[in-house]
Each structure stands twice: as structure tokens, then as C-alpha cells.
Length: 228
Image 1 (cartoon, one colour):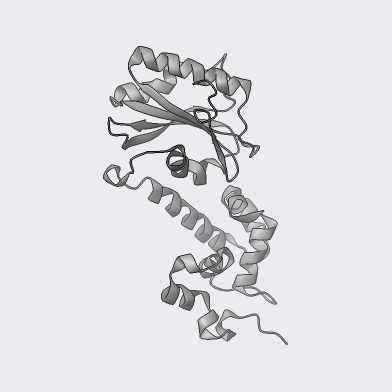
Image 2: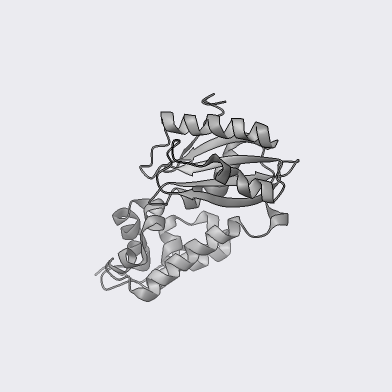
């Protein structure tokens, strides 16, 4: 009979040993999940469980999106293992926002998107955030300014700029997500962008870009020359 225990694998093939020897970046996603799970179930190793989770939940982004109860509903994943997975995901999110002095300088749309892509691609509803920047384009803060459907006719543009005014930011980058996963800008997105730019001129706060986050990708309205 085939073995289903990680302990029965050759030492060089065990996830923890491979991580210690080669670094976490050398492991597959299934192997990293296996380290969190520690043990498998009857007929299935922890690595195979990790592979099954990724398949059932449509990859890492699906694992990120899954609720605690949805994780618990997976075969072999009780509350303890679900908590371990959710805790690891949350630590990754917090690392992105660790401390102001460690936050990066934004030099491109890709760098701005990277700050929020992981978290915002998993949101079930639309959300607008602003990255506040100083005169050197260093990140001062990332603030959520709107939830739910973002409609140009209903959105108060002043709410977008309130955190920037309070923190005396020199510029901002607006970012919102499309829960559908498709970041293609709508006419409404372009209208919001134009309104933000005009408001920014009045307040002397430059709107550097407006990004739309999709599933594993983003679009810069400035690069597309939409609203700018």
C-alpha cells in the first residue's frame, strides 16, 4: 500500500526539512499549506490535502476568499486547522502594513497595486481605498474611504480626500476592486476619476493614479489615459 504520511517520505522531500534547507520560497503552495496542517487524514497526506484545498477553492486567492466556515467544511479541516490557515493569511496581510518607516516609496502603478492586491482581490464587495503619499511619494497610510457599490452620482468625493487633508498628504492614489475579478474600467470608474482629479486641484492634493484591482491583475487608469 502507498504511504500517506509525510514522515514516511525521504527527508529531502519533507516540507519542513525542505523549507529549512532551501527557504520557504522553494516550496510549492501545497507544501506550505501542509506545514500549517501538520498532519493529513486517512488515505491522504498533508501535502495531498493542501493540493485538494487549492483545487476545491480555486487556488490561493480562493483560499484567501474562503470564510472560516467554508474552510471548516472541507474534509479533514476542523476549526484548529482552519484557524491556522486564516492566521497565516492575516499575518501576511499585516506584514504589508507593518510600520510607517518600513513602507515603500511608490514609483509605479505596479508598486502601488502590490501593496493591496493580496487583500483587495479577495474582497466580496467593492471597496475604495486611498494610498496617502508625502512629497517624496513615500507611503504615509492606506485608508478605506468607501464600501459597497461605487457610483459616481452617489459618492461624495470629499470623503476620498478627508484622510489626505487630515494627514497633510501631498498626493494620493485611489484604488478600488472589482469583485467579479475583471478590472476593466467602467464609464462610472472614469467619471469618478475625473471628479477626483478636479477636487485634487482645488485642494492642492495630486491624484497620481486610480487603480482597479481584479483577480491576480490590475489596471491603471492613468496608464490607459482614462480620466487623466
